[in-house]
Length: 193
Image: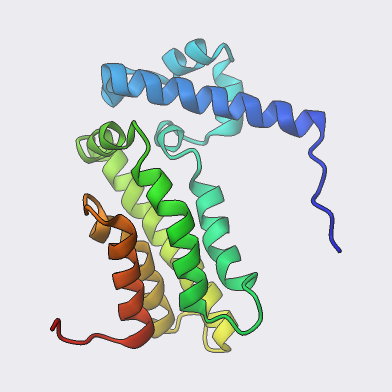
């Protein structure tokens, strides 16, 4: 049986610094607006140097999407680490059901979405990020299926999975809406009865 890796003091401190920077950035961006906050403002609010900030985040936009790499890794892991016999669609259904409803229910979700949608630089960054996630997930699906890494069906599946939050946002029965999307992916489209 594998034991989880022990996180050392250095890694915990690094993670805490990263979180402090991201939290300070989001707070300032929501209070003042993205364009009215400088990287220096964020560094000061997090009590770090701008050099330290840039060690953790390559750009100002990355401060807003601080969990980007983790989310992509989790998507790929849902495919690669699924139990034997479980389909890719069912593994991704489970992942989305476990991750999307808590994000949608976050008290700052509406403010965060408004910030991104009202800021051209963030919207552009978000689109590039989503394209990278689609490529990573599509490639993982293709590898698992034993087809070419750029297989269009595998990348279409990845794109549809990643559109689930946008398609289900604001639905009264969020879980039911997610289930409906994945039923379509698992069984194909059938006319509503």
